[in-house]
Amino acid sequence: MFRSFLMFSFIALQITVIALPPTELSGSGIIPKPVSIIAADGIFALTEKSNIFISGESAELMQIGKYLSQKLQPSTGFGLAVKTFEGKPASGDFILAISSEDTQLGNEGYQITITPKAVNLIANKPAGLFNGIQTIRQLFPAKIEMSTLQQGPWEIPAGIIRDYPEYPFRGVMLDVARHFFQVDDVKRYIDLMASYKMNVMHLHLSDDQGWRIEIKKWPKLTSIGGSTQVGGGKGGFYSQEQYSDIVKYAAERFIMIIPEIDMPGHTNAALASYPELNCNDKATELYTGTKVGFSSLCTSKEITYQFITDVFGELAALTPGPYLHIGGDESHVTKLEDYIPFVNKVQTIVASVGKQVIGWDEIALSTLKPNSFVQFWAKADNAIKGVKQGAKVIMSPAANAYLDMKYNSTTNLGLNWAGYIEVDKGYSWDPATLVPGIGKENILGIEAPLWSETITNMEELEYMVFPRLPGYAEIGWSSPAVRNWQDYKTRLGKQNERFKALQIDYYPSKLVQW
Ligand code: ACM
Image 1: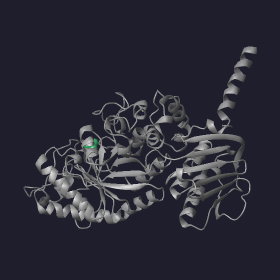
Image 2 (image 1 turned 90 degrees about the horizontal axis):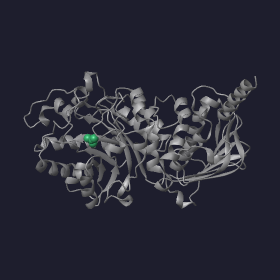
Image 3 (image 1 turned 90 degrees about the vertical axis):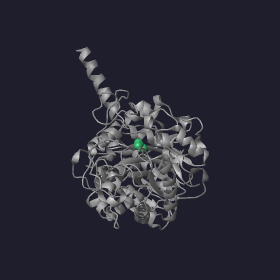
Image 4 (image 1 turned 60 degrees about the vertical axis):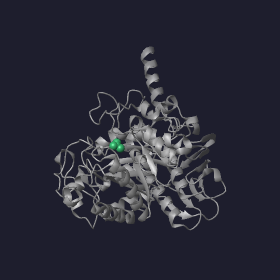
């Protein structure tokens, strides 16, 4: 009897402990880890009477306020009004304010002051407010993320959070060429990355197996080149309107889209669409396998450069961000003496349409323009050549940051040519010390690519992306001085409930207590 009573109270105690919301702000497991969290006494409670006040009449602030209201609506059932601030907040209000007094916060930083009366979010720029909202989402109980009505209370312990990023560029890449992903899938990925304060999505829009963006002057790129994918499925492509819709959706979440047209290699889909792009004037067959390094645009033909000018001209007009990605990787059948002048010419074309070049690390073999960027994925020597030419580097080391690498030998999806990347390995590296000769001053930021040879749908995408993505977000955002695996894995384990609320199909690594 006594024993079963003890058992009963033990179970009851456990349940109570799990059900209680945190009472101290510093106990919240925010990812990426903020610069500083100071707990204070008291608790803020969101109610149906809460308002979202914005400082001043601004369409952009109004949009951010509405974004917060919409995020909170489905689970709380509250339709929070967004209003211009006039006087004192009442109990339970949010205040979103732009103030340029705190220069340390930079373009993306924010400060949140939580009192029992209000949540006060300030930033220098709208992007900072957006990032602060992502933190606020994580401060509420995880069920705030659910798409169905939940029971409150919706409380946050009081305190102050100050936060700003380590690197300005924190990205993911999605390969929509090997397997095509629909607009709504890309939007879901954008929403998920935004919640961890990532701000760049690089879309790999062309490869041997598919061409995925409408180019009006070269329509067969999509009618032929977009007609299939790895495994022989039907492929697909984005119309220019759909691409613009993705760009706008991303911009509303302070995410820049970087489009990649890979060249001179990885071009079979284009070569199959237009015979004149081949040196022998014969169109190739469409390709649905997964080999790399067998295709090349004909670098000696004038039409090739007209083609590139047309493609990048149309893409530049659709892309507000400053970058066009030219690929440049694994051009194994292009002779080096042809590759180097090709990349030099393409840099000039990209400049002529008003953009800057990003290319995989091989492009550092050419003469880089002063504003070109090198994306390190495979050869440190190439990246160092880029640095020696004054280029900044985007860090995407395949052995640490490729989201398509298997977690371990039992992972069904993915590849392993760069090794296995368990969750700890994906997290435990510092971009600024990984490669001798490449320091923080040489680095623009980090990007985690997902190649889709084996990834055919969102469920598979999410299994490979989660739970590694929050780790890459933290590497890009949080100072190495505050990062360590032991602390991170506890916070990651606490994301479990959020992943479930957002219906993310993640890999439940045994290294983490979920
Ligand atoms: C690459 O993984 N070929 C950049």
